[in-house]
Image 1 (tube, helix red, strand yellow):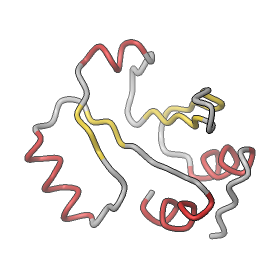
Image 2: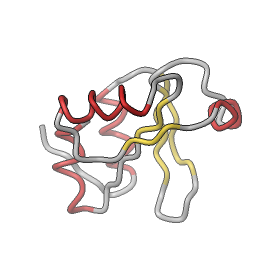
Image 3: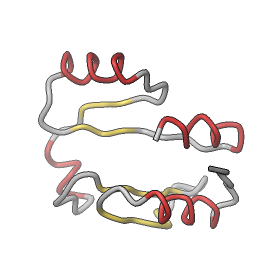
Image 4: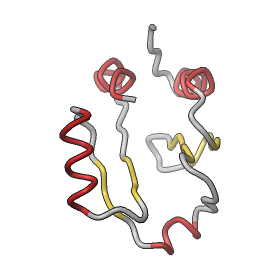
Length: 93
């Protein structure tokens, strides 16, 4: 995700990781160790239930107007890149 974020942020890509079940210290340590430069936040359980999250990771592509344009469960880089491309963000691998 970091590589995709680094390559896409100049095209308007923003990534927000939402964590559930870990402590703030654990998330902060993991983010520091992983050298992620996109933000992560802790969310209460109701955020996950409102979005229908049942498995992790669940990924959403949200357009510039706030509309969810893609959702998929699990990390599938090809699907992610395809969804970003549909929004005008092209990431070369």
